[in-house]
Length: 72
Image (cartoon, rainbow, N blue to C red):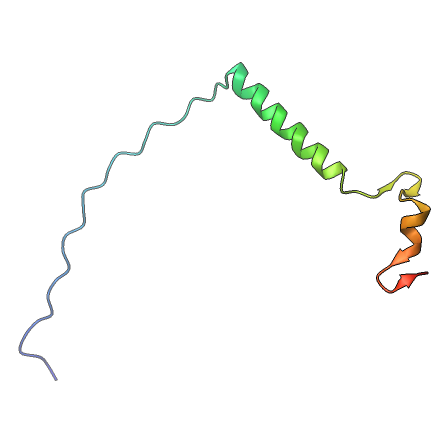
């Protein structure tokens, strides 16, 4: 069954804009220093959370004997 009235057509699409220019592949010395500083900070923070080393678990004997339920 057809309809007497046609549904309204959608508005026309806006014109396509030109893409922004590509960023320069050159990195300044200040940016390189900032990136290196950020990487070192992240690496330091990650190392401080690791409790094991080449010799095994590196926590104090007092910390190892405590648990949530009391002393082991």
